[in-house]
Image (cartoon, rainbow, N blue to C red; front, side):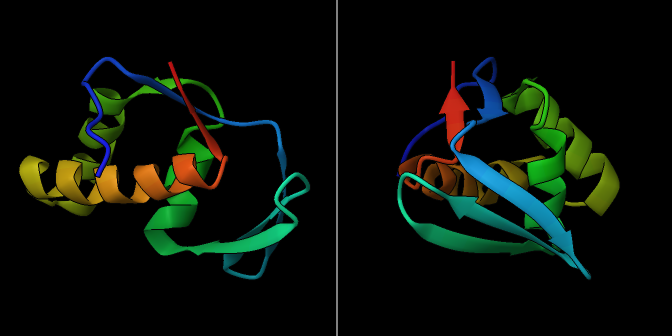
Length: 93
């Protein structure tokens, strides 16, 4: 599993097209020829990283919104962001 540093800047890559359908964000990666559906918290994270945001700032926002322990939030977020990065949907600076 990838470890994110607090100051890592996260942003969406430009390889995915996205659209809103009902309560879901649907992404299409032209390079990978794959579709992804994001709902709930995943959809919120996608919206938040439209503009670059540090890992720690994203954790702080999610902790406030969802009343979750910071350690648990960080661990779950690392899993999700790691998958997004593997799929080419996330750029980390």
